[in-house]
Length: 126
Image (tube, rainbow, N blue to C red; front, side, top):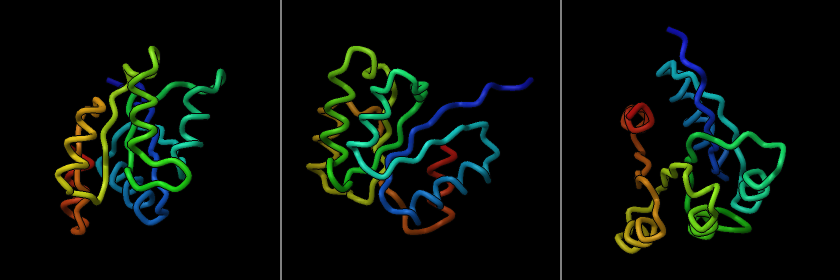
Protein backbone atom coordinates (compact mmCIF):
# COMPACT_ATOMS: atom_id res chain seq x y z
CA UNK A 1 0.00 0.00 0.00
CA UNK A 2 1.28 3.45 -0.86
CA UNK A 3 0.23 6.07 1.64
CA UNK A 4 -0.22 9.59 0.41
CA UNK A 5 2.25 11.92 2.11
CA UNK A 6 1.24 13.83 5.21
CA UNK A 7 1.69 17.58 4.87
CA UNK A 8 3.32 19.05 7.96
CA UNK A 9 4.02 22.66 8.81
CA UNK A 10 6.97 22.99 11.18
CA UNK A 11 7.14 26.44 12.77
CA UNK A 12 10.65 26.56 14.24
CA UNK A 13 13.15 29.42 14.37
CA UNK A 14 16.17 27.36 15.44
CA UNK A 15 17.83 25.88 12.32
CA UNK A 16 19.47 23.09 14.36
CA UNK A 17 16.14 22.02 15.88
CA UNK A 18 14.45 22.19 12.47
CA UNK A 19 17.21 20.04 10.93
CA UNK A 20 16.95 17.54 13.79
CA UNK A 21 13.19 17.27 13.32
CA UNK A 22 13.55 16.77 9.57
CA UNK A 23 16.17 14.07 10.17
CA UNK A 24 13.90 12.33 12.68
CA UNK A 25 11.12 12.15 10.09
CA UNK A 26 13.57 10.85 7.50
CA UNK A 27 14.86 8.17 9.89
CA UNK A 28 11.39 6.85 10.65
CA UNK A 29 10.67 6.72 6.91
CA UNK A 30 7.46 8.64 7.25
CA UNK A 31 5.80 9.86 4.10
CA UNK A 32 5.77 13.54 4.97
CA UNK A 33 6.09 16.77 3.06
CA UNK A 34 7.44 19.23 5.59
CA UNK A 35 7.38 22.99 5.20
CA UNK A 36 9.56 24.87 7.69
CA UNK A 37 8.83 28.47 8.61
CA UNK A 38 10.88 30.49 11.13
CA UNK A 39 8.20 32.54 12.90
CA UNK A 40 4.52 32.83 13.69
CA UNK A 41 3.85 35.73 11.34
CA UNK A 42 5.20 33.86 8.29
CA UNK A 43 3.25 30.77 9.35
CA UNK A 44 0.01 32.73 9.56
CA UNK A 45 0.60 34.30 6.12
CA UNK A 46 1.28 30.82 4.75
CA UNK A 47 -1.84 29.31 6.35
CA UNK A 48 -4.04 32.11 5.06
CA UNK A 49 -2.56 32.14 1.57
CA UNK A 50 -5.16 31.18 -1.03
CA UNK A 51 -2.56 29.10 -2.90
CA UNK A 52 -1.13 27.15 0.04
CA UNK A 53 -2.20 23.56 0.64
CA UNK A 54 -3.27 23.41 4.26
CA UNK A 55 -1.14 21.08 6.38
CA UNK A 56 -2.47 17.92 7.98
CA UNK A 57 -0.47 18.72 11.12
CA UNK A 58 1.32 21.72 12.62
CA UNK A 59 4.40 21.29 14.81
CA UNK A 60 4.77 24.53 16.71
CA UNK A 61 7.63 25.90 18.77
CA UNK A 62 6.55 28.43 21.41
CA UNK A 63 9.54 30.76 21.57
CA UNK A 64 9.48 32.37 18.16
CA UNK A 65 10.63 35.79 16.95
CA UNK A 66 8.18 38.42 15.66
CA UNK A 67 5.10 36.53 16.85
CA UNK A 68 5.31 33.74 19.38
CA UNK A 69 3.76 30.30 19.24
CA UNK A 70 0.95 31.07 21.69
CA UNK A 71 -0.26 33.96 19.53
CA UNK A 72 -0.18 31.73 16.46
CA UNK A 73 -1.95 28.90 18.30
CA UNK A 74 -4.71 31.29 19.42
CA UNK A 75 -5.11 32.61 15.88
CA UNK A 76 -5.26 29.11 14.38
CA UNK A 77 -7.78 27.80 16.88
CA UNK A 78 -10.06 30.85 16.48
CA UNK A 79 -10.22 30.47 12.68
CA UNK A 80 -13.17 28.43 11.35
CA UNK A 81 -11.04 26.61 8.74
CA UNK A 82 -7.66 26.38 10.46
CA UNK A 83 -8.94 25.17 13.85
CA UNK A 84 -9.46 21.67 12.44
CA UNK A 85 -5.70 21.25 11.89
CA UNK A 86 -4.09 19.38 14.80
CA UNK A 87 -1.39 21.45 16.49
CA UNK A 88 1.41 19.77 18.44
CA UNK A 89 3.39 22.19 20.55
CA UNK A 90 7.02 21.04 20.31
CA UNK A 91 9.05 23.17 22.69
CA UNK A 92 11.89 23.24 25.19
CA UNK A 93 9.63 24.76 27.84
CA UNK A 94 8.36 22.43 30.52
CA UNK A 95 6.90 25.33 32.54
CA UNK A 96 3.55 24.31 33.97
CA UNK A 97 1.93 27.64 33.02
CA UNK A 98 3.00 27.16 29.35
CA UNK A 99 1.46 23.68 29.30
CA UNK A 100 -1.79 24.90 30.87
CA UNK A 101 -2.01 27.94 28.59
CA UNK A 102 -1.38 25.90 25.43
CA UNK A 103 -4.07 23.37 26.31
CA UNK A 104 -6.47 26.19 27.19
CA UNK A 105 -5.76 27.55 23.68
CA UNK A 106 -6.76 24.10 22.34
CA UNK A 107 -3.36 22.64 21.48
CA UNK A 108 -3.82 18.97 20.61
CA UNK A 109 -0.60 17.86 22.26
CA UNK A 110 2.32 19.37 24.20
CA UNK A 111 5.75 17.74 23.79
CA UNK A 112 8.89 18.92 25.54
CA UNK A 113 11.95 18.65 23.31
CA UNK A 114 14.49 16.26 24.74
CA UNK A 115 18.18 17.13 24.82
CA UNK A 116 18.90 13.45 24.15
CA UNK A 117 18.88 12.86 20.38
CA UNK A 118 17.55 9.29 20.58
CA UNK A 119 14.72 10.38 22.87
CA UNK A 120 13.97 13.34 20.58
CA UNK A 121 13.74 11.00 17.57
CA UNK A 122 11.45 8.71 19.57
CA UNK A 123 9.18 11.66 20.39
CA UNK A 124 8.96 12.59 16.70
CA UNK A 125 8.18 8.97 15.72
CA UNK A 126 5.40 8.87 18.32
